[in-house]
Image (cartoon, rainbow over all chains, first blue to last red; front, side, top):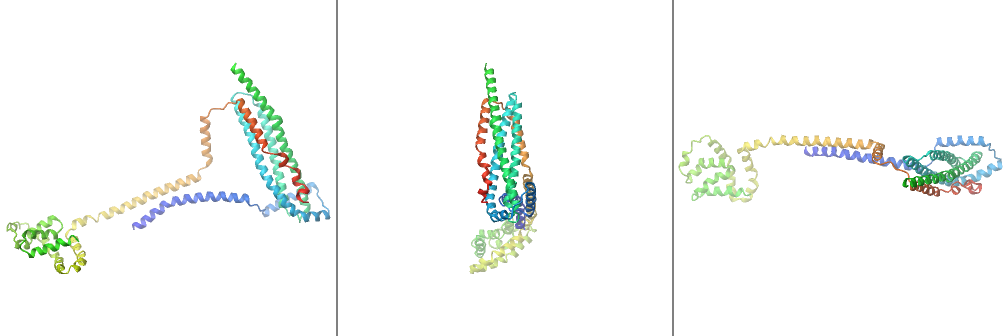
Length: 216
Length: 209
């Protein structure tokens, strides 16, 4: 009887420990599932349908109509080119991550500086306007980068042998998006270099002037 | 084992009249309690015959007790086995431990009657332990659930609020502007537009078309 009671007590005491272990196990499994979802990418049926819809739209917009010789040439080489496009897709992912980090870092530093200047009763109206304009340019870049990434993904995942016209249209759309994204990135850089940095120079000079006046 | 030697020794002493004083101790050994031993010393006929004083017979007014003494004497049939055991010591070792315990339980009902109540008292403690264990287990389980369901944003919000309350407002200095300028240059140097978005990435030559 005492043994049964002792076993019951021990089981009751072990219940919370087991439940906590289960909780931690559930948490760890949830994180592992998310990581596996990010690593494995196989387009589902819905994805393929969405790709086909976008490809048809591009064909209509760009009015792509290949000749029979061009189709044969493209059908014979498109599979190999899709492998190269997949490597470009991987690079675009890395570029997206690094660009997002860099641009967020710049905006964060400028916003912090604006806050400190406000605390010191320095006029930050021009700086705030410039920060807003920079954020708008970054948003445009992000949107165009997403479009470019979508075009590259479709180019890599579509059935190019069945639809060579669609492959050609997607390739042209991706090239156009790449050019647009490149311009957006240059626009951000030039805005920071040509507008933000001169403004920071002006702000620094004003702070030096206020400091010398305060010392006098 | 030490109880066996004294019991055998008195029986041998009763056969020897040369030792009257030890005859009184015989009954002391048969009954473990001193109170009963005294009564057996007074009323045992063996003691009287063995040279006990006549004054002991005058103490006979305590007649109520003799039945108890007789019981002890009746129970003593275990002793004949002991006496026979004096010749066969090997058999006495096996039989004696079982037999003396039974009369001891019969002779002393009061102490044994006191022990049974301890059983129910001990049974109450395990129930208390179980109740405490269940309460602790439920508390721990509730704690685990609370920790699991506790949103992490709340803790971050509380820490931010406390830091905002304690930290003074930072003021801008020329060094802050310089640091911002340096951070912007460092960040822009990490990315290269010409390599990140080169038009040659998707050219016919690069793709083998």
